[in-house]
Image 1 (tube, helix red, strand yellow):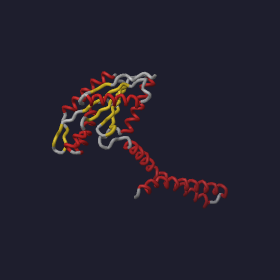
Image 2 (tube, helix red, strand yellow):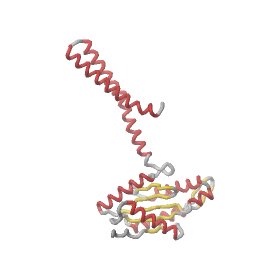
Image 3 (cartoon, one colour):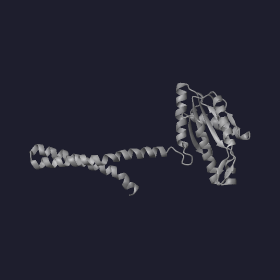
Image 4 (cartoon, helix red, strand yellow):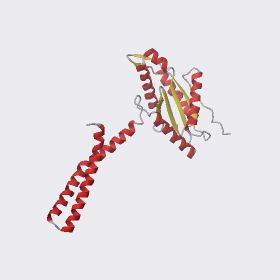
Length: 243
């Protein structure tokens, strides 16, 4: 069965039920007007068919809702790592930014990037690069809280949002994460190789126009960590006051 035909089943079922219902209503009207036995029997038959049709078709609506839910979930997941994808993590970051600004809570945005991913791909192959990306995702997922939001931004770069967390506390937590990554070789293709990450942090500020302002400062801190040799955590300074 083709996808178009499959999508048309619930639509055809609804049209069928509506037609039966209209026909049954018309039959009842005729029966009441004429009082004829045949009209009453016809109306009863149509009502029975409509009831049976509803009983048979009702599971389709549950299946359709489940399929829509599964599609929505799949649309927010990065297929390589199982973490949130770029769009979903940006949406989550935007919601957390708005919440922190509205209620005055603390929140930190972290950008985590695999050091020298191109070199890993060149020396060990792209499958090894994918293995490194997956390994980092697993390590981060194991280290963060259930309230933290984590997703792959692009390539070997990830974004982590930590609600209700101060910048210095986040730095200590992610420095431990950085050490764990450096101490855990990545296995791929029967071999293993070391991996390190650089991390840039920025606290949500009332002076940031939107979440992209906070994210931009975290990325600037990430560049600073890379310029200093990588395998380190760098914190962005406070957002500048508007002129």
